[in-house]
Amino acid sequence: MQRLKTRPQFQATMSAGTIARTPHFALHRMVLSAGVDMAANPDTGPGSQDPQALFGIGAEREQAWLGAMVPKRWAKHSVTRHTIKRQAYAVAQDHETALHGASHVVRLRSGFDRKQFVSASSDALKAAVRTELQQLFGSASRRIARAKAEVDTPADADKKSVPAQDIKAQEASTLIAPGTGVAS
Image (cartoon, rainbow, N blue to C red; front, side, top):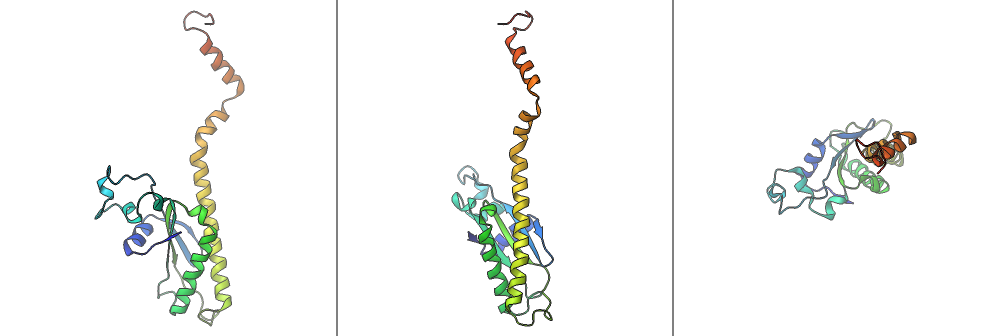
């Protein structure tokens, strides 16, 4: 799994839209097109305005890309921010197969109650963060699988929806020469 490192990578991924949300987190996803030829498409080279150009070429695009964004506004202590980021990367490893071929950003969108989680990196906070991140990635994985299934099934659905009698009638009509009424 590749990690997002630059501000433009984060911005491009976040501009693509949100795929899943929980009370404290949002998961943004940008699908990367795998077959980009830099020689044939000069818009993907250095200095390109195409957001796809930020994620390399070839096999790098087929990998999962992940970044974690934990603003100071929602996690005041750096210990807490780093704990949340580590949890995000660890949980994402469990769902890596579903995340392939796209860039993702996990964003903390509201703070955890400091009265409930007094310590900046308590075991209770780690458990709460991990549970919510598992819900977030689980929801995203199901949604991605459902979208892939919808893309894969339309061609198969047409074949299955035609009754067997209609298939036999279609085959019989192709055996008869047009206008003669006699089988060829």
